[in-house]
Image (cartoon, rainbow, N blue to C red):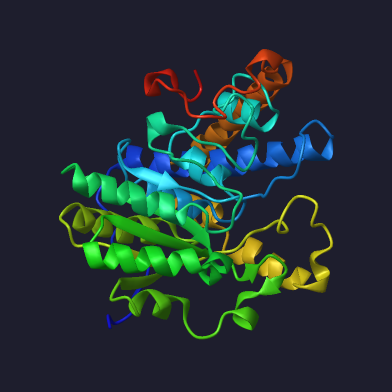
Length: 345
């Protein structure tokens, strides 16, 4: 059994330059801004269905996706907006998808929990808990069989580790040394219950039981996440995978946007502590300023630019057209000619 490896924030910054770090900051703010606007769309009854906010966990998605190429694959969860944005999704197409509009990534048919963009290596979010584990593992197997060096990352929450599928795919991945990284976003709660009340033993230990190298990292520290992931991705490309990362993080909102009475399962003091002392964007902003990579004025200007982009995208999506009713069956069944299927076309 592999020994658990705990990764802490590096004393020295990871390889890169000021543009790399500012891009990482931009991506985290884009995720937070997207979620704030999505929440307002829901509260104003302009968005159909429920959605699950990613606010608070931005360093996880950005730290990992910044270590990937366009060809590398990710699979996501019902709380997947952050993963999509970090992998390159644009505001307009994202908001159109949430509002069921034809210009959305899945022509408005996927909604909040089923966004995919195969052109960016995003194989899709999945409303089924743990449902994308097999997809990511299959993508890694495909890469290996084709002799490519593409890596697959599977994002999932701590609650999904109770799904039997995870154990099946870990066994396969370990046996065949697949280039896959299982990224468990442990936000401390499985829906409305504390993780340590329903998960016996160590989550990392479950991966270690299959001989998979397991790590734990501060999911609120984008530099720590990125440094760890870059190393694992490089090793996975060399055939040393699979790997498991437990990212300790926190969701600021409830399980979903309708979960507004959280006091019965977690305290306001706990929420305040995470927001005041462990916020990933505030922490990284402070680091950027302390390193002389950006001034407060430059960061404020960047934040304002992103907010303006989001507002414009929302207005665009609200005015966009719905899909034509005649295409209700389009992309539902696999066509006889595979070339016909072009998601988003």
